[in-house]
Amino acid sequence: MGRRVHWVFGDQLGPHFVDPRRGGPDRDAPVVMVEARGVFARRRFHRAKAHLVLSAMRHRAAELGDRVTYVRTETYREGLERAVPRGRLTVFPPTSRAAERLVARLGRVDVLPERGHLLTREDFRAWAGEGDAGALRMEGFYRHTRHRLGLLMDGGEPYGGSWNLDHDNREPPPGDRATLDLGTPWCPREDAIDDEVRRDLDRWEREGAVRFVGRDGPRAFPATRREALAALRHFLRHRLPAFGPYEDAMLAADPVMSHSRLSAPLNLGLLHPDECVRRAEKALRAGDAPLNSVEGFVRQIAGWREYVWHLYWHFGEDYRKSNALDQRAPLPDWFTELDADAVTARCLSTVLAQVRDTGWTHHIPRLMVLGSRALQDGWDPAALTDWFHRCFVDGYDWVMLPNVVGMSQYADGGRMTTKPYTSGGAYINRMSDFCGPCAYRPTDRTGPHACPYTAGYWTFLHRHRDRLAHNPRTARAVRGLDRLDDLPDTLAQARARGRRAP
Image (cartoon, rainbow, N blue to C red; front, top):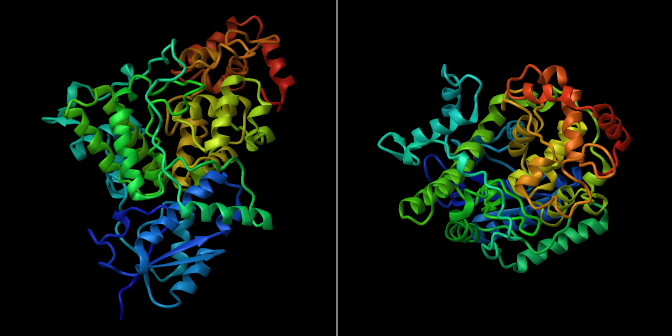
């Protein structure tokens, strides 16, 4: 018998998913990749995301050359039957439950030991089973991960003496500048493969086979391993030093700020999280970046990203149905169509335009502008999860399910976080430059200039008063409802607005 054929999914594109290390496929084993157009036909994805994924897959196939059989079909099953009609295949564990079920149904695929993350699922289960793991909070997991990997450690203690430097990483944006003046973010050069993908997407739309949302401008994210490494080097040199202080800040004219935008190549498998955090630590020890910036970046990857990956598998498929706040309103059309021009609130209009134009915005606009709007207006968390999955270039089921259901929408009732994350306009005003030219005023709850986030915040607290009054982190805010003389007018105004864009 010949070597088993190794199946590579479209988010397993780095060398660690093909090279023969630690139980991987045989050296130079034949590889099969399946480009299944039906994935894009079933759901309406952002066009920039479709372009990025297909460009990355086709670039990887070109790199593998004669070793790969690249099949373009409607379904994965059809592609595999065409490329490998008989015999067994190998694959690394898929990154979604749906793909995992597909692999199991095929019946002839041997799943290799997992890779691509910092800890194994067995490692996570062991941590989750410890007595002090309790509520599975991210901070405890983050410290466990750093201990386990010896990451940002010094003689068994956290480097610099503190595990958490969040208090240094919550600065508002500088008030005298429209941007952070960090230079142009790293961007790739498109090539013939990008052109080919774009022509195919055009043709699919003309034929009515698929429908996309959003705009597909020049590709802004890495589609190859070489590009991903270049983006990582650029971030470490030009943005990491300033990352920490302004990690949570927002500027209308500077959507990237000091962020790395490495989530897309990480989630395509082009980068390994270990190399990202190790290189950041190396920059710290070389004196090229301050501790608060490096710790903040490491926390995002070795803490939050790793934590979300493991919670996706740990919580199980029923987690998708979580709706502890019983929020069932459908997503409005202006939101699903990314119609930023229909929105008056400058913060929401700006962020929605960023998603429309690039398929990306950083974590605070996602949580405190997009997610907060959904939470305040009572939108269905499952529909919102699907929207984030489809409309973000770095969106995958494992990424968005815990992030939206648990973190953003508190739909799991506190299994992942200790409180709902929403705020009035005062927070947005403090952490951005959105509010100054806005038609609304962050201090107004009622009237023609009432900020939809300020009014929405109090409306949300009122709607869930009984539950939130017993939460130590929200009880004080709930008591504040009793001091609002204009609460009836605030609630009436919210009802009158209904599903109109704010």
